[in-house]
Structure formats: structure tokens, C-alpha cells
Amino acid sequence: MQIFGRMALGNASSVKEFILLGLTQQPELQLPLFFLFLGIYVVSMVGNLGLIILIVLNPHLHTPMYYFLFNLSFTDLCYSSVITPRMLVGFVKQNIISHAECMTQLFFFCFFVIDECYILTAMAYDRYAAICKPLLYQVTMSHQVCLWMTVGVYVMGLVGAIAHIVCMLRLTFCDGNIINHYMCDIPPLLRLSCTSTSINELMVFIVVGVNVIVPTLTIFISYTLILSNILGIHSAEGRSKAFSTCGSHVIAVSLFFGAAAFMYLKPSSASVDEDKLSTIFYTILGPMLNPFIYSIRNKDVHIALRKTLKKSMFT
Image 1 (spheres, one colour):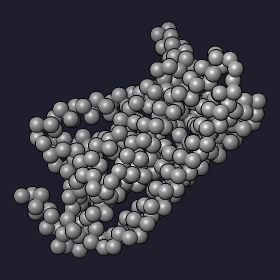
Image 2: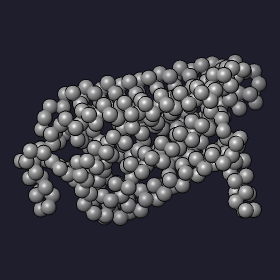
Image 3: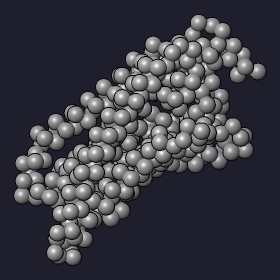
Image 4: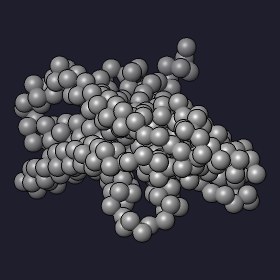
């Protein structure tokens, strides 16, 4: 009855708060899913924070590759904190979120997801410079270049997030206040608007188009040139080493862009539940898996971890 009472706000001029329905409405799944996603969140926090600490404390990791990995871990750390805590609330009680909180969550969601697109792009370019132009690597990926690339990453995220929020704030939500999702995302919010969403849809097309096409083309061209260069290496050991330096990044890129492509390129007839499930892969699982993807077969990280543990044991 409380939910239907809140739906009556649709007759008012504007909705002041929303109800997030969450991942599922099945009562028997709420507690198991709470502990599952709480575990994923803790692992994600520990993994990304641990990688950040290792990179900061170990001078031999102060290279362009690990500089961008530091930024990726920072983004994933923030990304998880924007989405997962609010999701966990929905498993234990009715998840009511104010209009201001909803817009804030949407802003940071857009900001960090766009940042991740361009950080992965910068990492692909770094691998291209290291493998295809090794003699010019120190110049191509100088400290100043890396700094400007990072500024560009966060500026693109900021511009995209502001564009979405400005368009969203012009809408009036008076057709109900129940969001069939575990977070404030653009598509479910547009369904609640009682004013025209044509500008918002155009903005989604432009922002998503630019922030998917540009990184995808850059990554594709970078790895095409990398592959061509690797195939020209006569030494099997040299080829193996070159592949190993790129393998973890290819996996991370495939996971992130693959999940995002499945989300936005699937048929329009797909259900809302499929939307929620596909979103989980790049909003929750990706940030958890990235530290392991970049650490499991990485000798530099293993050495840094051993040194850090030895220091902590003898101090």
C-alpha cells in the first residue's frame, strides 16, 4: 500500500523521491544476494585499494603503464562505491532515494564509466608505444604526456556527466516514482518522465556514440598495429613476452566493452531484467575482476607485493 501511495505522487507537479525496486522482487533471494554482492564489494575494495597502495609504495612501478593502472583502480574503487552500497540497501529494506541523491548517483555513474572508457584507451596507446616504438617510448609517454592524457580522461568524463545531468534536470517526473532497477540509470528514468525526452535521447546518442566510437577505434587500431609488430618478431620468447604484456589489458577491455555492447546493442524487445543483469557485468563484476586480471600473471606486481609484505613484517 505504501508503494501505491507513493505512486499517487504522479498527480503532483513533480516527484521528490524515487523507489528503486532492486535486482529482484523474490523475497527468498534477498538475503543470499545481499551477502553475495557484499562479498563482491569487499573483494573489489580490497583488490583495488591494495593495487593502488602497491603502486604508490614501490618506485619500480612508477611507470606510465602502472600510472594508468593506478587511475583504473581508483576509478573502479569509486565506481563500486557509487553503485553497490545503494544496491545492498535494496536487499534489506525498501530502497527510497531522493531526487537529489538520484541525480548525484547518475552524475558520478556517468562520470566514472566514461573515465574508464578513456583510461582503457590510454592503456592501449601506452602498450602500442612500448611495443611498436620502444626507442621513442620515454619521449612518447613522458610524464607530461601522461599527465595531459589523464586530464583529458577526466575532462571527457566531466563533460559527458554534466551533459546528461543538465538534460535530466529539465525533465518533470510525474508519471510515477518507481524505478525498476537497482540504480538511477538513464533509460528507467526517461520512462518516468511526463515531459518530452527527445533531447535526452539525442544526448544519449551523441555522448554514448562519441565515448564508445573514439575509444573503440583507438584501441582497435592500437592492437592491430601491436599484433602486426608482434608477428614480425622472429624470437618466440620475444613474441611471448609481447603477448604477455598485452594479454591482461585485452581481457579487461573485452570484459568492459563487451558487457557495455551487450547492454546497448541488444534488441529493444529485451526485458528490464536482462537490462539489470547485463549492467551488473560492467558496474559491479568488472571493478572486482580488474585487480586480479592485472595481477595474477604480472611479475612486477608479485615482486612489489613480496617487498611490501617483507617491509611490513620487519617494521
